[in-house]
Amino acid sequence: MSGHSKWANIKHKKEKTDAARGKIFTKLGREIAVAVKEGGSDPAANSRLRDVIAKAKANNMPNDTIDRSIKKASGELGNVNYEEITYEGYGSDGVAIIVQALSDNRNRTASEMRYIFDRGNGSLGATGCVAWMFDRKGQIVIERNDDIDEETLMMQALEAGAEDMQTLDDVYEILCAPADFAAVRDGLEGEGYSFLSAEVALIPQNTVKLSEDKAQKILDLVEKLEDNDDVQNVYHNLEVEE
Image (cartoon, rainbow, N blue to C red; front, side, top):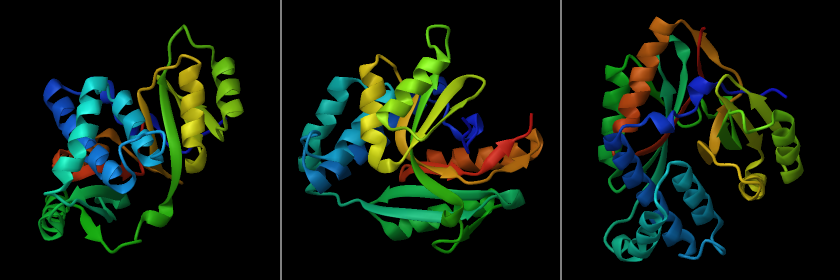
């Protein structure tokens, strides 16, 4: 089965440094807080919180840290209101970039996004300028190893409701409709699989293939965007030539 995205588009979560991991945990805590505010602190009754918890676990966030974030959320949100904002634009060579942010100051975040895009030889565009190039999909990434049989995994993924599975050099990438994400994730988790990544993501319909030198400029821009405290996710349609 074939998929649309490449390993270059999937975050190398297991390679993150401790400092970067701490920043990821902070951002996940913010996502948990917004999910709790939206639907309450019970994951069984709050599908968004359940999805964020799955994403946190895929990032190796300890269970007690997740629990503390949930308990802390209601009190914290009494003082801070986060707004979900999406920014769209282009990097060099026409690579499409979408940035999802949670901000308590829209003007500050917009100014910072414009500055990062400009410094990275990119341009911030209007809402909708690149969103049409991406599909919203549930995405589960599992590391390839000798203990996993590819055909068995594919069969179990399809039975759980997956649409597609792609075998890449280092990983298996499983895609499904957003509405089926929880069922596919829970089904594979029940079979004993652990995930490098598990989230509802934006998957590019087509990619822009660039040489390693040109691609590095885009990856530098993406890294600077991800380093911003307000940014939760960055998606792009870059593919690096082998």
